[in-house]
Image (cartoon, rainbow, N blue to C red):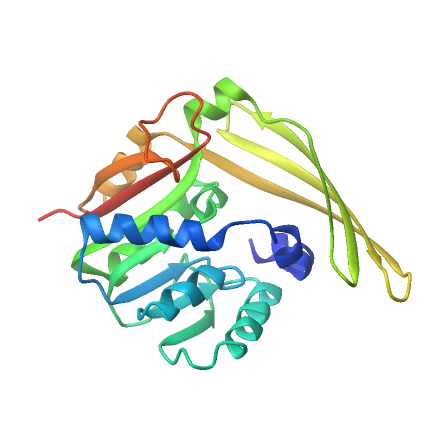
Length: 256
């Protein structure tokens, strides 16, 4: 998965500059307060450029973010440099499928559909095993994902996005291919990047293979690790999942 983001990650923050990290972090914090209050330590699996983590560190949490993409982790550390006062914040470049930190956490979360990037049963189970190894006995695991019934009902569509800042202008085209027998979607990205200062241009072509998940299979994978689902709902809204809920969130933990 690191190769997927090697080029894409270079422009990640610009591509998602309108993403409301603050509201998402508030939403996650409300879930934490409801289901695992008085938590202190957080492990973020697939932390990207670290923006959720910086917000949680700002609010007093001891946060460790893990990311495989070299470009993404470099940007996370750059973002961290701008927030040096948050001493309980560190970023590690590693593979979440075989992570060994020799430490347990109150909260583990994995956001922005990181679990949907685990497209094989082996990778998903390995990632859940990482959670099992690093989660305290009464800890809480929170992750969002593409919700299968909604993907099959709504169907992925071609999307075009144009973004720019003072230096860069990007046109991104996303062409999805639904693979119903694999429960995956190949999202083929074409990005045309122009440097507004020196007028150089660059083209990037990447395919992101995304897996949509169903609640019964998540229960099955978790049960193999003596874990279970505590709660699930529509991402951000808190509503009951329907066949229009493209993004879902699951809260899981260890079985007693």
